[in-house]
Image: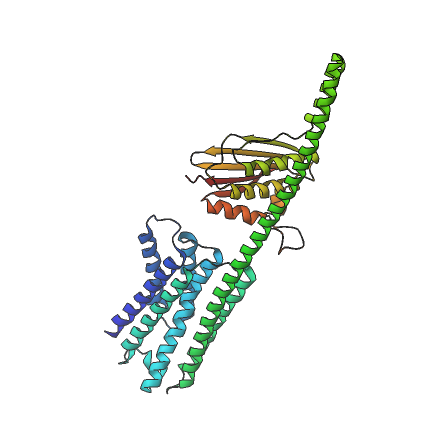
Length: 431
């Protein structure tokens, strides 16, 4: 009879672990989720009921539990790789301290040793199993609710520190448990130590959430700073273009006056030659503009066209769609970052060139920017990290592009072809 309760407790623990993983990370898709859950539940149940109860295989059972849970999250669940490692480790490092605390609590209250309470023939064993699984379920529910408040945004070093602390606390608890089982009488000091270890894990988890919130705030601040600098550059470029237009207007006015005098003097040949020289020197050298239907977006593109013309960078624009269904500010920031990156990226190539393509496909708007490159960028820097010294200030252009694409349910892809770097962004139209 006691063996039946042991198996029920093991199956309950497996169910809680699977439920925690599913809700903590979420499925990648909605196809046959019940079958995926049943598969991992069966593996964990076989490991927990069969292998863990064999003498000398306890540690192997724990390792298999971690491995099965991680592989399950890796193939079927969402989240980043570090989140999947955390989701695999947390149930194990949570279950052990809870079980030990419950056992030591009953040991202190009943004056039975820990080894007696783990014996299937003990009268209190069923109560120990019930309260330990109930506490495990409650803690997992709390962790899930904390997780739903937002995603994690930790650096690789922070993840390593957090996971290392969790693993160390697990190893300490396991070692203490092996020591406590050697005592034939109740030892209340073990209960105190287990409670301290559990409290340490709780504090570490709170610290993890605090760190991720701070990192998100920092990331938003850095993106805002990057966007502000882009807007400042846009204002400067717009001011320069306005000054050029004022100069051109003044020159055209002077040219028209001179032309009127030549015509009045009936110097037709001189007037024709003068018109041709004005076209070559003034009109044709001025950068041409585009019309997308948005004054803000036009200003961004036309400023980049003028900049390229001034710095002898060949720039082509092909725009066959309107951008009225997408926020002008978002598109202007997107274009500003993409074109700035392209202009910087083509400097080392000969001849330097930039190409902008804006088109539509079904319910999506595509913005594609190509620039010439001298050597492969992705081979040298596949993650496209900034090479500037002040990384806290620079290097957020790519992040800004990804954030805007994510906002519109779109995608971002970087590739290379025919000595050109290609940045391709697709945004879902919002009607």
